[in-house]
Image 1 (cartoon, one colour):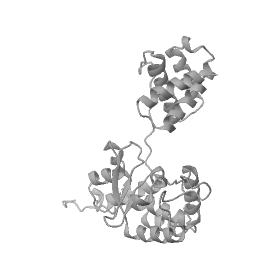
Image 2 (spheres, helix red, strand yellow):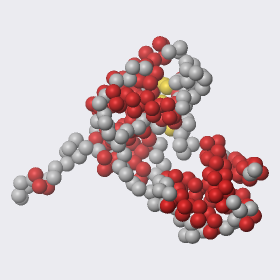
Image 3 (tube, one colour):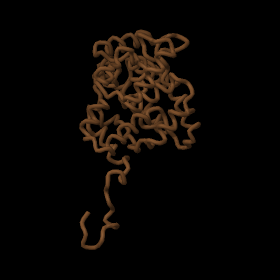
Image 4 (cartoon, helix red, strand yellow):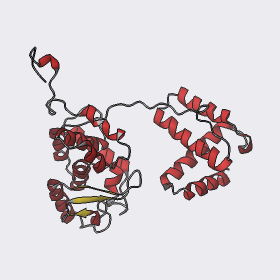
Length: 282
């Protein structure tokens, strides 16, 4: 029904070199919006966009979901319909800045030890020891791992900016064991056993949560917790926040500053003024 519209969205998105996943999400969200309004495309107004987004907010959609809808509709209005967009009239929802979940070093080791599948163990240890997003870990190739330089070349990044991160000696031992026992993959480092292609992100989250459960961790965690724990532990070890930012591939330093709040203050050697004798010094 809206094929011409989707073709126009794709054309405008490809001109701007947007990712395929982003293009598909834009088309899906715009389709949802058009079905909601039931109006001809030529008669759409900002009020229609605001009414749709207000309905989503009242349904209890999260700020992230609300803003995904808004981004797609905004792109559609500006790049396809050539309609003036007003951020004041159709504002984004303010996101809640919750502190990320972080596991202790002992808990991370317990999760890895509780993972019976060698490929899964290699993935979890790589995400933690190098600070990778799950999407970055599953897109690694054999040639991205350098034993000589003890680095990992991260290519499929969120912001499309390649970077190098550190390769742990302990993780290299796990990767080596995995490589020899699991078919010696020369292309994709962690290929799907079913398709030979890239693993599914949801599948990685599923086996990580199962390993966390086996390790006795009851609080809510995900595979992204490995990345948060990597950054927090580096900060506790005294690594400059700028180096952590570089290893994580954060463009905005504010994304890295959150680890100032989640790191163990006891390990940083900070004493409460309540514990300092009167007349003493911190």
